[in-house]
Length: 197
Image (cartoon, rainbow, N blue to C red; front, side, top):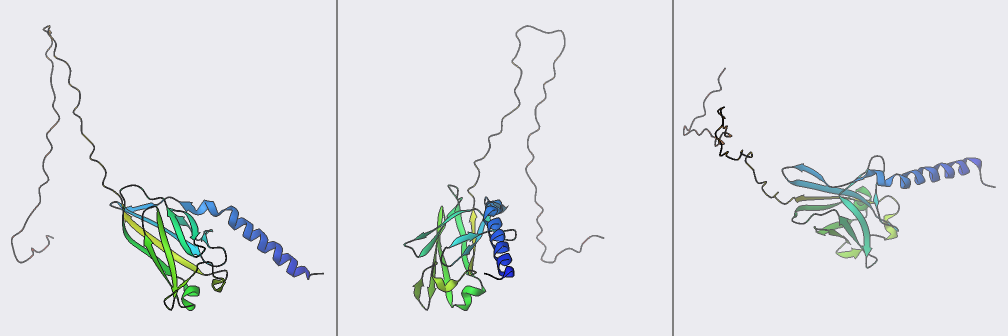
């Protein structure tokens, strides 16, 4: 018969594990617009016998919609990429567990998928290699530029149709003011002016 504390520990571990799996979808969200059309996507990728996107109460997947293993070796991330986006940077950084193994990660792609390759001493290492154990991670970050929005046409306020019959009361016509061009101040002085107090 197993020791009671071992049984209790196993039950707690199973419950915690089930809770993490059940709530994994709660930590996924679409890409995030940072500023001025800059979009960010990222995730923690867990390596080892069953590579996965790792999410829990402190780890999220943003704009990463799936993960697969190609040729039973290298990783493919699926992204919520939109037409017209342009990749700026893609990074797959090893955590301390992977670094300790002298494994380096490289990422290529952008668009709807990004491929992650692993190497050790110049030789390919598969993401599902057992040497990674249970807790080896890659920190993945992909930054892109969203397409420019199409200019929105401006429409003038509708005008009343002219009447052919004279009216006894005068009518007023109000036109919208014309836009004033922005003015910029330029200085030709080589020395900056002191701030006003």
